[in-house]
Image (cartoon, rainbow, N blue to C red; front, side, top):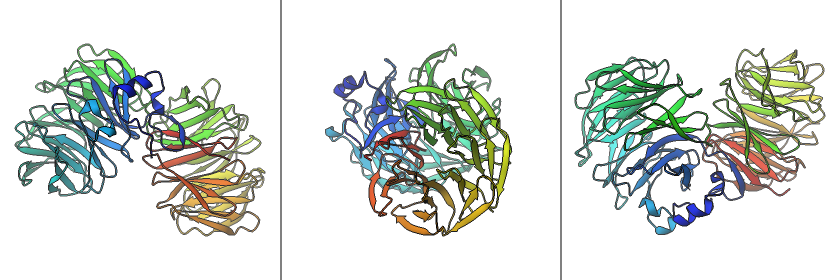
Length: 616
């Protein structure tokens, strides 16, 4: 669970003005958070004073006047994907990946102690869209469980369940008279429903050239803009389904759309790194924002139409003057899915890598950001520091070596014919190993970057590699359900460990090199005796597959991270389960202990890194 102080009370805001907002509402046992979570959706409050951001760790409320964080709402236990303000701005709804909807209100009294919070339970899968009726009395919700549900905002009771044709994501809106609910699906269909009876009225099948990637409703609810994967935007009449206008100009997927409050302008953002303004009557470009090197993934107009907020995949939210196109100010600290975390040997720097290729370096003692390494767009799927701490290696589309002190890119190692799944330094720092989707492991000279040898034997992709602390043996885990032990000097496969019945996702050596831990799709951790090659213990308790493993420096504890968002701690001598660390809202992708063993660091697809207090 998380600590209290979730609300937007005056006292809480004042108490935290001088503190780092990343540290608000930490989970139990966590002592610090790095990053504010992945941005999923943004929406202004009707009075324009707040920008609400649905994120991987909860809902952030930003004060757009002071340009400060106002609150972090962490009642959701999974990624918050969508949100909506009631027309009067007094009620706020948010929906998460578990199918839970939370109603908060009134906005000025968001603290849980007011008793004003309602949890709407009925959906069984991801909530993808929320919409209030014009009178604010009804909330409509769409879910990947194949239903749209109508809720009484006052009582929280479910009024109707509308069955969809499929479980595809749908965008929702009410018509201005409140009598009709409009749904636009990613299957290119428009559905109309009677909001009073819940009965389906009609469905229009659209025929754009490519599949839908985003949608937005005009304020008059007579027009819907639909973005596609080929960069084209289609404007359709909601009453007839007729195609009114086609907007062309983007060079890649259109991922988000928003109409201005007066309905005359459409904003669109694309993976071509631009945001465009369109005159919806003529179809002409009015402004093109190209001020960011990375892709914009979300846009929202302020109620007065004078400001556009845009979220960028480097974790920034930028505000633009809609008349001039000039940048106004920026919120920072968010990040996309965190795929890897690493400690340097000294224990004072933590590296975190994201799905967008952004690598952040953090001060491990203060939780302050040091610098960002980026520029190539590769997924930072795995990170490792060299033993001397001077070099950081990242791998996915290629293997890149970075100077930790200057942040400069030193070199790229090429040779794998597919993605890199894992990288590891030998204990002496002279050899770098990489395992890939091409079923091979490659050994490199860490100083010159020259390829030394290729280890061949796995029949499917290699997911994880690890050096034995003595440096003589390299272990590799694969989708072929085996673990192979390789002689680093000769490149020979010395032994194959057989015991998994599904793919092996993660492996880790104990500090003394006598034990190898492995985890994968079977939802358990196996401990292997390195002398015999036999399993000596099975750790069972996870409810889904184990993605990452880490031994404590003293070897007494092993941490396992699961795609169910939990971390388990185990006693390696007895196999006894010790504790579960909960607080992440999505898959735990990476774990690492500090050199002194007092801190466990976890990276998650919720876009955050958590530092946990663990007593060695």
